[in-house]
Image 1 (cartoon, rainbow, N blue to C red):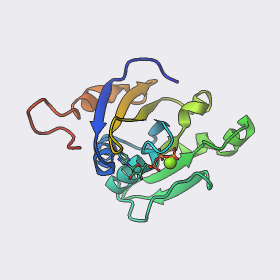
Image 2 (cartoon, rainbow, N blue to C red; image 1 turned 120 degrees about the vertical axis):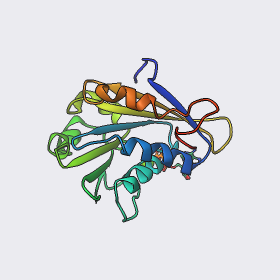
Image 3 (cartoon, helix red, strand yellow; image 1 turned 135 degrees about the horizontal axis):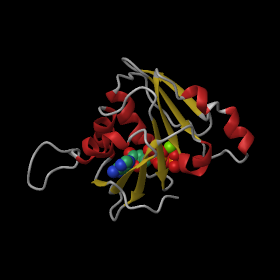
Image 4 (cartoon, rainbow, N blue to C red; image 1 turned 45 degrees about the vertical axis):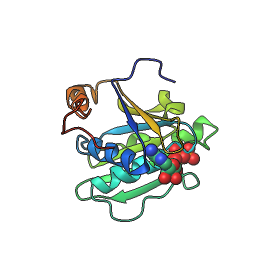
Length: 172
Ligand SMILES: Nc1ncnc2c1ncn2[C@@H]1O[C@H](COP(=O)(O)OP(=O)(O)OP(=O)(O)O)[C@@H](O)[C@H]1O
Ligand SMILES: [Mg+2]
């Protein structure tokens, strides 16, 4: 688990709010990107992926890959790989996922519970940590860039934060 302070913390109050954050991040994504989704069971990692995929033009329903381990969706310009490694118990199973082949120049990859296999990830990534909030639909999303791949977009990521009393940020 990462202990560094997050680059950005975004509270949401509904699944749609989390999906709006995901859509905004999808707008910053590019081919070869990796996102690690982590946090509590049922916090909204799959809901986040649904918003992310839709923003990239995925029209088929995005469902939890908890049992299939990996799902592949076709977007307008990019393929979206959606993995859930919660059930993996052995490093060989991680190798079998072929992460280095998945993360290529035609796709964006999102891995639920990816923090558990952080040592096996092929390069840098954006970590999105979701935690449960006070009310049943409250969530807090913490964003961190790990490695170089997203670090050149930190200014753009920070710009996603809604200015106090202003417009133009993420609406949750
Ligand atoms: N603010 C919110 N953000 C995200 N999801 C929310 C929010 N409020 C309520 N929800 C609901 O919480 C549930 C999140 O489920 P989801 O399957 O996305 O979680 P998950 O983190 O992928 O779970 P798992 O760890 O089992 O894979 C959904 O039913 C969603 O509608
Ligand atoms: Mg899930």
